[in-house]
Length: 634
Image (cartoon, rainbow, N blue to C red; front, top):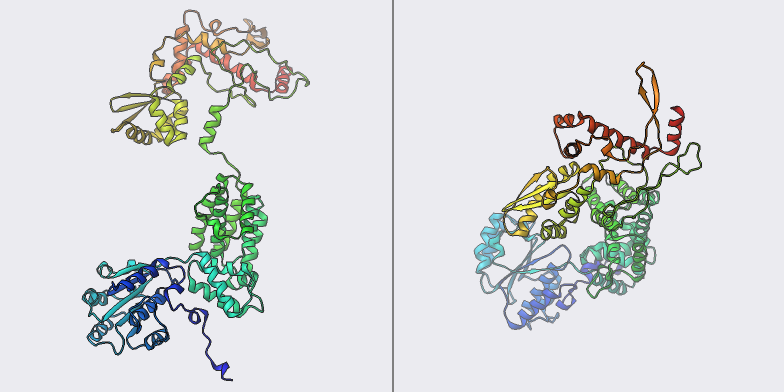
């Protein structure tokens, strides 16, 4: 009957550390304080800072025992003298613990100051421990300024707070500060195992690991959750019971969810989220666990090193599972998942509908398709060798269809012409690329090579576009960027400031960028080249079979006149106007006003050139079956 009336003490109070070596995870603080006590260099005011439950108040009580022990001041209090016993029980007259949240006004500060003149009742020092010190008002802090700077020799102040940034700088400058760190995961796990053994409780290691992980570096929170798990367990403390009591997901469930996301199984991932939500799981905690698991997947992709790794705190079987999952995904995809989950977690913490946001987050992550970034795409394009001498493949089916025309024999190519194999449709309105433009691009890629290499090192995608479509010319502090085609003008204009910043950084002076659209700049633009008509003739595909065209007869009737193959543009354009036609085509290719375009198109010779080229390109694009149908209809 007497035993049943003994009040129960929770684990945090029952097994509170009584010496500095017993304080877990704060060796950097206890070692410094121990050396100061041994050498007699004891400050008059201390500030202990850190998150909740890391041992600030416990360290303050141990320090008070070290100062007032009969054998002290000492780093090893005896624990048996009257001072040690009373301080441990919280009944010492000379050690006053004050709650800063309750006694926070200036009147309370004045009461402390008035009592400072009295000597200690029995012990060596009168010690004031002010917990949550940041809760004191500004007037109370102002009242304590002089006292904290020059207290009586028999007075010591120990202030503890979780938010030192809320305290005035004038107060902080008068205190000797000690920062308490988050307690490492493994140390919390060891402490929980020790407490379970002392209490005679059988617990699964996975359950203790879950408690240590959910503690978030706070020993008091870990001990409180262990107390709850022991009270609710029917026998052995299991991971499932701990997860249910805490409202969190087990590690096995989180790994299953990550596996479903990587396997692109959105339905399975969504089902796991809904199941946990129906059981009352904390969705904010679930989102954090999933984010941490994706981080662990990224770490599992890295080669093993000698430095500390986040995987060191994880059991071996879980590390093996993480490596198995990470092996089936690329590092880029894992990073995309991490950024997506991080953004979603930020919204989940703020939203009144966290369940909907988390559900859609896992569905979106499981639905992401693998992508190739711009740098790799540009490298792939630049490293693909052209299929020399390979004729374009037709996308219009085989040669067995009715009306199918035979494949034309490829025309001989000059040594300076590159032909790329093209599959699929040929765009009818695509501009023809001449040898002069190819030579200008090849020469342009060598303009200011050091600047291009510097830009490539900083912005590979931008450098790739500039090599394809921009000429560079530096005149003093002005860098002229010339767009070789209309399609590059907008991109270069959007990145004009970026090019200027990179050029200024490379050249060591302020560079102004001007954008030009007058064709390629540099020496290649001034090179004497052959007429455009001859160059285009070399790259024209072989002549198509003769097709009858309707012509207007003198009597008004339409007759079918056979048209012969056109061997070159010289036969279209008059011999006296090849240069004018070439200039007109070049003017049409650069950016021009509507009036200039109309003037070029009004020239009959140029019009005939465009009509012939359009007809050839349309024939290439049309499948064989369509061409056969067209012939039959005609």
